[in-house]
View 1: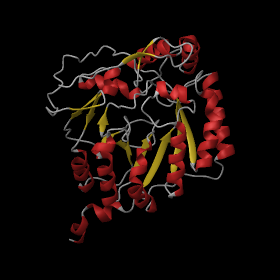
View 2: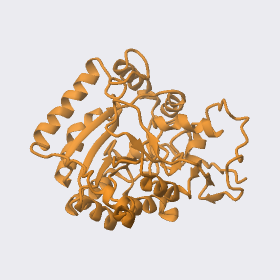
View 3: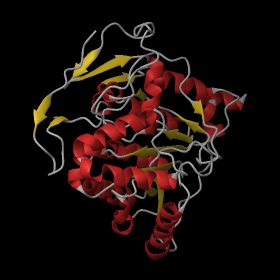
Length: 364
C-alpha cells in the first residue's frame, strides 16, 4: 500500500492563522474512523496509484447509478465516478461517506481517493435495460466528477459518451475548469436538450479559497467556464454553495452579477451545514486559519440551524431557518430578480432515449 506523505510548513495565510498548517489540504486532521478495522483491500486493486501525495485506489462496484430520495434535490439518480475528492473542500458533507470505506473523513477523504474504472460498463448495461426509463442522472451527487485525477483517468468523459450514445439526460455539478475538455460532447448533448451544468462558486476571495477548497479552480476561472459553456449554447446554473454566514454571505450579490454577466441562466444557493465529522474538521480548520473569527462564524451557522451546526431535516437542512437564513434567502431572491429576469433553464428531452436504447432491436 502507498502511504500519503503530508507536508507541514510555517507560512501564515493571514495575521490570525496558526503557525502549523498543512499545505494544499482543506482538512487539517484525521477524525476517528469507526470502521478502521475493515480490510481496506477486500474489494480494491492491489496496485494503487500515487500522485503528488495522493493515493488512488481502484474499486469495482456492481452498480453505479444511485437512486436519490430527497425532496431537497431536483434529481432522482446520481453517479459518483470517484469516492473521496482531492479538491479538499473543508466543509464538504460528502466527507462523512469515507469512513464506510475504512478511511477517515478528514485528510484521508482528500488524500486517499477511490475510483471506478468499470463505471462506463455498468452504466451501459443500465441504459440498455428494458426497465430503464429516460431520467436525468446527476454527475456528481457526492464528490466532484471533474476532480484533478479525471484529467488522467477520463472516467467522466466515458460516461458522457454513453449519455450521448443512448440520448439519456445528464446533469453535471462541478467547481473544476476541466469540464471544458468535454465541450464537444456537451455541445452535442445540449443541441438535443440532454444536458445541464451547475457551476459551484463559493467565494471570490482568493485567500479564503486557497485554504478552504485548495485544489479547486479560482472563482475567476469558474466565471470563465460559465461564459465559455454559455456561448456554446450549454445551459448553466450558477450555485453559490455553501454560503458560510459570517465568512462569505456578503458576496451573494457580486457573485450573482458576475455569473449572470457570464451567461448563467439561473442562480441558487445552499447554507453550510456541518454534519457528522465535518463539524470537527471545520472547527479545527477555523482554529488554524482564522481563530479570531471562529466564534462568530460558528454562532452564525448555529443561528441558521436552530442552535446546531447541522440540520438533517428535509426542506430546511440546505436553506436553514431563522433571521440570518432569511436575510440570505432575500438577497438571493433579489439577485435573481435583478440579474436573471427572463432567463430560464430548459426542460430535458426525455423522448429520445427509447429510440437509441436497443438500437436495431427496436425494429423487431
